[in-house]
Image (tube, rainbow, N blue to C red):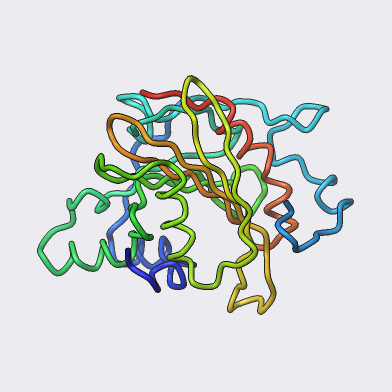
Length: 228
């Protein structure tokens, strides 16, 4: 596990873009953990894709062959959110040095970035990021703990379990102290283990208010999760 990588993860995808390590595939069909955001601020947003009850509307499915991101799982992404595969996550960067840089930028604990689902087209600042790894012996909770422990500014972790699509997974809510904002903000992630390897899906956000506003999209992804 690469301790310290998580601290550098903020802005890593942007840095990777500048280094030419990320390219987008064609657009696919497509606890508050202790930091409290103003509930009215969260309620005023709808993740760019929610019905009257705050449930995100589907904008398509990713994960299957031919979709924007080919993954060991499939799940629905919220309407207007856009997905791009992260190249370099499978050692496809040109040259040994570029491959090492890609690994340092994109790896967090036991998993490596494979896909970004961007909320900006829906009016939010944040991503659902999907991380994958080769098959191993660790269960979902162990993988998830390794992921969070690599986020060196993480604190107040709260773990749980969930089931979806015949898969049993682990979920965590925690605080991340942003060096930029100099205050903690809520984040969360879930993990499952498939025959093709573990998968971690993470939701951050610029701050806790943005994070809470994007939760319907995160819950949609978790609820529609299936092995691919």
